[in-house]
Length: 180
Image 1 (tube, rainbow, N blue to C red):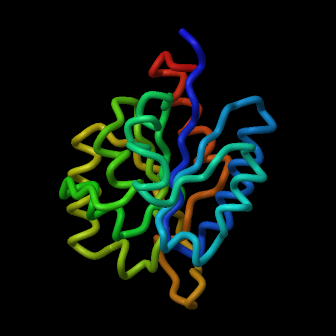
Image 2: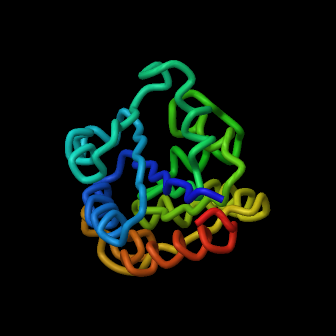
Image 3: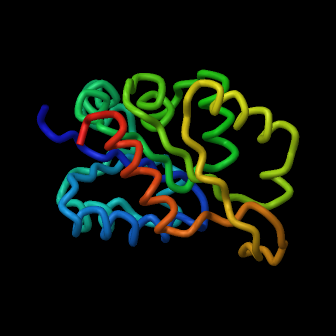
C-alpha cells in the first residue's frame, strides 16, 4: 500500500504555535504532512507558515476546493488534531460538521489522535470530560494534556502534551493502522 499522509488539524488555541515544530519534525523524518485548520486557528498561526513547512496547500474552509474533506479523507493515514480545543472536541462528540476540520473528522476512516490544550478549568469541566469519554469510546486516541501553568496563569491539567509524546502517538497510530 502506498504511504498515506499525516493530516494535522490545527484549532484556535495559543498552543497552535507548537504545531509548527511538530510538523517540521514529521516532515524532516520523511512524512507527507497535510494541514487543515479552523478559522480561529488563523488568529494564532497563519496558513502561510504551514504551507512553507509542508509544501502543500492548507485548507481553512470546506469551500476552499470542492469537497476538500473527502479529498483529505482519501489521503489520510492518520488524522491528528493538535491542539484540540474544547470547541472542536464538543463538535466531534456531537457529530457536528460545520467546518473543514469537523467535516473531515466525520469522513475519515483512519485512526484519529487528539492532543487537547485548554485552560485547566475547561479541561476538567464535566462537559469536556464527557465529550472526551465519548470520543475515546469511539476509538479516538487521546494524548493527555500535561499539568502545568497555562498562558493565563492558571495551573493544572490542560497544557498541551510534549511534542515527543504527541509525535509518538501519531506515528504509533499510523503504523498500527498499516497505512505507513
